[in-house]
Structures are given as structure tokens and as C-alpha cells.
Image (cartoon, rainbow, N blue to C red; front, side, top):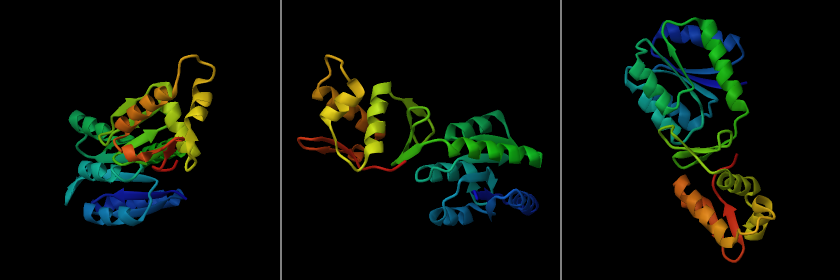
Length: 221
């Protein structure tokens, strides 16, 4: 059962959404303030966060930025003030959906199902403030901006992560990723590792094992 966090200060709307979602087999934790929501995300892993933008103790946008630094849960924003600048800000943060109020409950259910189905098949790994997204072959920064890697750079990163905690030798990397090509050397691999460390912003995630090769010690898929 998918566990959703609903952050909505309107008591009538919050109760209606909670009841409707639970009737559709979702588990729902409903919070009326950001303070309550912050306490919940420390202890509970949510598959989706449905978040009002204007809350009594702060902005839903700021809360989304906070959570994105340590959690992978996707966001759906709701607001009665769905101006173009607000929508743009929400999507820049990384929102999956932006639903203007008032809305039809069936529409909300369809959007929730779509987001959950999309993320169920999406492989991602958190590295500090950044996110490795295997579907797009990109490293996404905390503002939600993707940096697309060259195909072979990303293939090496994926090989290291999939093989962890095994140490991958330079010879194995050359064989698997470069094959019979004439010019690659160990130095070629070292250069890719330097680029990956810079792009990840967490260079310690890729450990050098002297005389052997490299080991991924960051997050798991």
C-alpha cells in the first residue's frame, strides 16, 4: 500500500481528500502545518507528497526544497493561486504535477496514480544534495536541474553502483565498456572518474583502491 503525505491546512478539503484517498487503497498521513509535516518526514518513508503551497507556518515550496535534499519522494503541489510564475517555480523545484484549486477529485486521483506508476519503474540514487536518475541518464541538482552525462561516463557510473560493494578493476571496466577499441587506457578511465566525482559533488562516493580500480560506496538503487 502506497503511503502518501498530505499537507493541507483547510480542514474540510483535507478531510475530504484523506477519506477519498483511503477509499482508493492509499495510506494517508494528513498534516495541517509544515511543522507537523517536518516531524513526519523524519521518521516515515512516503511514496508521494501532496502539498499545498500557502500554509499557515510557511511556504510549501520551501518545504519541498528541504525534503528534496534527503528524500526521493515525488511532489504534487496544490494551490488556489496558480499563476504562471508560481507554476514555473513549482516545476523548477521538481514538482511532478501542479493542481490549481478548485479541482475535481477524480482528476487528483488520476494524477496521483500516474505519478506513482511512473516512479515505481524509475531507478534513482541519492548522493548528497544530488540525484542520479538512471532513466534520463542525468545527475539532478537540488533545484531539479538535470546535467546529462556522456553515455560512456554514465555507463561507468551505473557499473560501479550495480557492482557495489565489489571493487571493479580498470581492466574489467575497459573490457566491459570499451571492448576492442584501440586507444583507451587506464588513464582514460581515471579521467572519467574525475569527471564523475566533480559532477556528483560527493567525490568520496567513488573510492580509489590502489593498484586495483574503483569502488562505489555511495547510496544504493
